[in-house]
Length: 335
Image 1: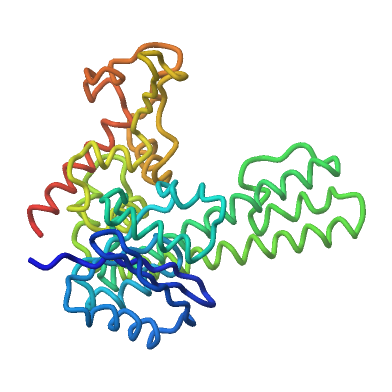
Image 2 (image 1 turned 180 degrees about the vertical axis):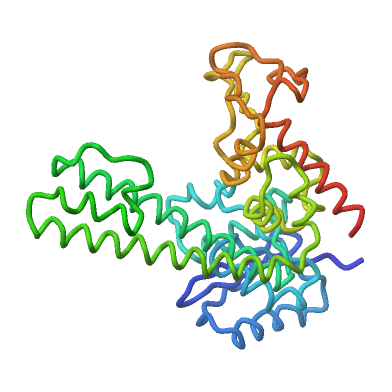
């Protein structure tokens, strides 16, 4: 079997750098070229003419989905790696695009890259983007509501009752309590932004339901107690492909429910706690399901979770996510 060629692509919006390394570690000349589809395809095809298996890696980023769609058919294997784990590149005192490419080629040759899963289904990609757009409009409303209340309190309007302050009729009562016209004009602008964010949220939700209606698992997720239509769409769009997780523990860790356990010379380095890495939206879904209570604080008491002896019913976050995992398993079997 012929030994492969290890190549790396450093993507940027203006110019990108492509380089390669032989199996014995000898580096090949690196090429800098404008980031265009036709030029990128031609440069990768040129490396493939060496009649050897071509392994290509690139870091996960904003351009990765676009570039992977172009180069995937041209290489033997495409590895999309996690940039935060490439310490050899990040700690380089003479960092440059060419040095980054050489470092990625070396890590690829040594098998030290952490691969990141990235789907190829265009419909799923659009669905995922729509769901994140929906979440962005939700966050925009939350920030504007907090700002509106802060403005009222700053001008002496202290009694703000629930959602009435944001409704079209109820807001007039609070606007009348402001001391002058300039304050009212400012609040009208904030209300206009809030109304726009709410309108865009509703329109985006319609698009999410239209695209997500093609996926049967959305209805399946809603059978889990406490999971409504929006939560089902969010979970389906973020998970995207159930088989990407080798086990349910991988899914828990991706949902920010993993446990950090760091030690040196058999001495703990800080308290054990929930890992901050992962997708916060999946953790939020676990908190929103029916019958939740706050989880135990691992930093203050020794929880069975830390020793792998925790029963699901003693940790509501993991119990609720486990219900969704069962749905994911069913989806995997059906697919």
